[in-house]
View (spheres, rainbow, N blue to C red):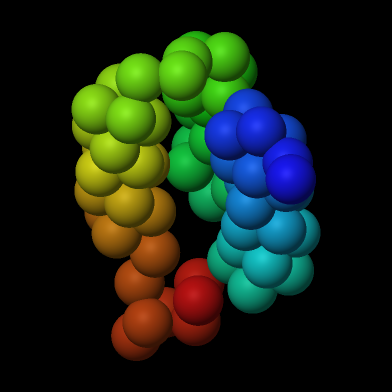
Length: 69
């Protein structure tokens, strides 16, 4: 069975591909800001807080009316 870091790394790789595909490289880069900290952490609270902040950044970086996503 994969360890938690490998699972998180795989999930982040998949998210990166989908966000870049649908929202573009600039939005993707903003979403993944500081992602190395989350990937390196084994603390689920740290990972959850990073994800919350990343989703907030994605929300403010996209605009359906203007076709960004």
